[in-house]
Amino acid sequence: MTEEGVQETFISHLIELRERLVRTLVVVGLCFLPAFFYASELYDLLAQPMMNALPEGSRMIATGVITPFFIPMKIALMVAFLVALPYLLYQAWAFVAPGLYAHEKKMVLPLVVSSTLLFFAGMAFCYFFVFGTVFKFISSFAPKSISVAPDIEAYFNFVLGMFVAFGVTFEVPVVVVVLVLSGIVSVEKLREIRPYVIVGAFVVAAVVTPPDVVSQLMLAIPLCILYELGIFVSRFIEKRKPAVDAGAAEG
Image (cartoon, rainbow, N blue to C red; front, side, top):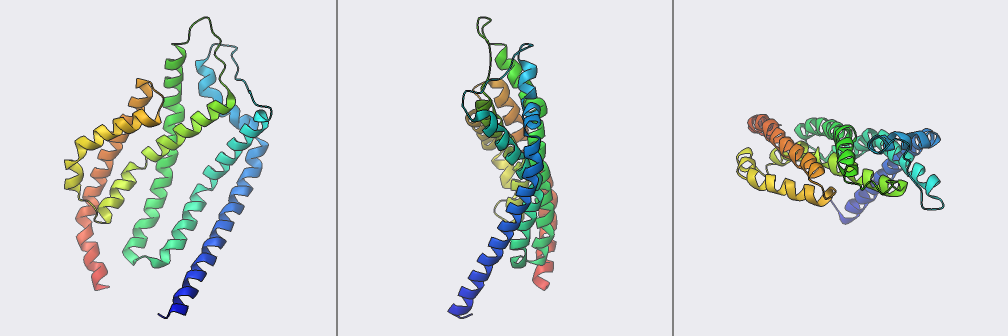
């Protein structure tokens, strides 16, 4: 291919990428409008685990002038992004699909679907199990002489960080499968480094979670379990991989 041909191909890819980004932004915007209409109710739902852990009659506070408006808007944007996430991942898959082999295309869609479901599962685990346990544990240490009234912006930032941490943690099986599928590591190697992964899981949990034992354990233990799940699934992929590679070579 000539230099001009390469340049034209590169420009066409940029144009396609721009079009797909515009489509994604439009979908996020369409999801944002109804979410913003119910932004206050969405924040109340998000704050429910904290409110359940506080004494009866407690309320959160807003220390900023525009915080009561700005934080619900952020929550609406977060919800819009999550609702549009499957479409976003589909656009990413459609962009890279033309450059993949046939057997790779067959694996991409299951990986996209599973990674989306696992990310949502991590957020759900955090909301329904982690928050209630952690907030009750922390509030139990509050002296009786003080009134606990969390700031809504600080609470949102904390919740968002925890959602990302647990959502990414639940992607571990997908990462392990991709590493085995691409031939970077083998299942045997993954088993050999298991002790280092366990130590790393507790280090990561200590860094990304609050400085309490409960939340650290509730992140580190699922991370270790999900790593084992990734190894279990990778065993079957590694057995099928030689046959798939042979079929691709014949094709």
